[in-house]
Length: 103
Length: 479
Image (cartoon, each protein chain N blue to C red):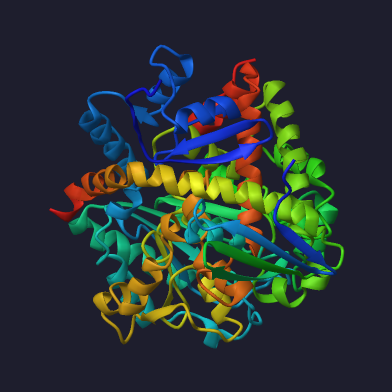
């Protein structure tokens, strides 16, 4: 079974995700969710996006963080994919809703 | 096989083996993870229940998409109705003086005899002028303090002036006095009876708890006086003329049952289980008065269970915060709670006029000002025009940055349509009006309580459903 591409050293975690699968926005949104527990830095190196975590609290389980991050990343990418489909509808909906006010 | 349907705007959150989905107007449903996968990959069969459920909640459409958008737009407009209304709640601080020594005083009140902290008639006149420039058809003037009854003359002046102006403006005008009630007397009540005035007071629990939180200058026993004055006020203004609010401190957090019982004993049919607002003395003395938000959420849930049990026994008692949230979850209607709007309700739903004529975007904005930070000041009624106060670049900037639909984390939050933005709280907690949701106590509280209410609704317990609807419609639940 293939493992998540990660490296943990002390209170530091490095996760590598594929830029061919995930968009930067998804990585950024997923990272945001962990800003209360860790300091983060994101870098793109060719087709790989590297997310560097440094835990704020020494009791933080970085293995758990890496697993949660991967799931969160999928959810964020789904949000981006589906929002592309309904983006125009959403804009139309808001425009119609406030049409009577702008007249 | 790929089926042809259009996915409409929605948000989601995975909860265990389920996925919670909601749309822009608050319609919601749960799917299993498999059903969710099928849904987003366009693999739902048109005869499947999941397909029909999503269609009925307007999260997908297979035909007549324009009609569905029209319907969603109408519901969205209804949810955002407070925008068309503009400022309807106008809070007026007629005095910063107070005869109370509340441990959590959020406005840094002044001594009883410091009359230079009273609003003058000249300022009061300009306040009323500004209020009536508001385009809102509904105007609620809420008197605050300090203790507003210490400047009863100016309360009367404002009420009379507002009523006079309203002869020509013909708005729906009402008045509320937020008072500790200890100074009210028959003469005042006789006068108030002739006008449309409601009373909002504070009861923090049974005698011992209330007195600990809210002693008076002259006596520690404020409870007996307030309880007596509630009855006196009801005699003059009617049973429903008095409502009460409670504030939770570390002294009272473990006593929600006793507090709820006390509200029942005092004859109230509503209680608002309210956490401590970290402003003024509440912020200064946080080490003594505050508690972790997680603790409040736990106590709130237990309190809510207890209130539901009371209702099941035939006594109507609504919990205020739950009622607002349930209205947002279960109906298409907008609610008037300033803290749960997007864009934020500050200034455009409610504004506050301080004793010196300074205008702030919200009560919390003036609470911050009372400790020296006037960031949320919009202007002054004595020196600025209505346009300068309510149409300033500052306010535009605040509004722009308080649209929850575009705030980090809120934008994708599955509970967004029930919640709102609170830039003043963000600024107070984190020094930034946008704030970081992962560190926000108010986000933690709102999200946890919304999720708990959704959990209770998911039980499909007929009694709980009927009780919740009785709160929304304010009709007695029949056992």
